[in-house]
Length: 431
Image (cartoon, rainbow, N blue to C red; front, side, top):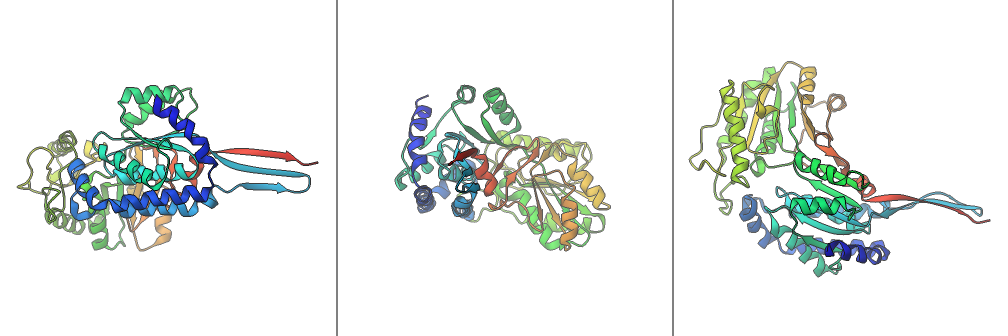
């Protein structure tokens, strides 16, 4: 493919530039995206349904890129083992070459920048393949970064079908592939890369739990966990999809949760009064409706009456379910929509067992006033990130990673740079 050849041809000169220059150009590209925000926000509403009242993604986009720019010198610094009259022994970090970034539609700018910014700063060239749901995002990004002075062949946006993508990976076209998407998509990436020794980073499905301990601030827990379940119409990688509550607080928590959801306004995402917009595609809404209907048929209680704006299509009533069990798909399979099941638990041990009863492991949220208790619980949860008294947030200083069917690898933080480069050892005998 011509784009790959051009990326390979431009990468060495790009990597030869001083790191300070690469950092400055990436930061200028990020600023250029910010200057487009007034146009980007309604574009996102039209492409994937997020209400304009939330102002787009530039805050998180800028935070992540800025953090990675700030730690680049340290993260990519040589590790000097010895520099004496006799020997220089050092480990350097060198770029992979061409990095393919396959980005999703749900947070299309923030998920892309997680890899695009550090990959470019580390000296790689980048080819971005964005989701077909949000095709304008890739166009905006390359426009902004090219205007900043990053060469066109160093950062390219492409439109590829699944088979062509797999064929390119199988042909060893890339030094590293980062994919955010479904478990099935991640499996296809691994199959394509089998035997090529191409580095892979995968962030796949999630079924993230929240646990409200007996000493939690119930108001804060309800506000944050329900927002984490419903924001972006539930279409968040680390959204809350199941909640476990200390039995003595169960009824009070459910009452608070139901009141929050009943206050939402479902509607046109271009209307500033809309607080929850449509799902990105009718088929996504159909899956959520199917999970809810199956759960209710098995004995679950649905607490939210159908909103007037629910059209049976992409506009979907957000839902709170109780009397749920792990026999129901809504508590096992990824929903990726505005529904959450809530269960009472008798103690920490039961909560831990239920949180771990999942094929996924991206984040978990623990609510307690006792940090030592939270950390002890966190040590026993099979997940990539554990939050205490917060949820649905990506801290660029920490490694963004998952376990089990959520995937492999890690982005952001110093570890993100290590995954986007390879170590190279120098053993230089001077005399």
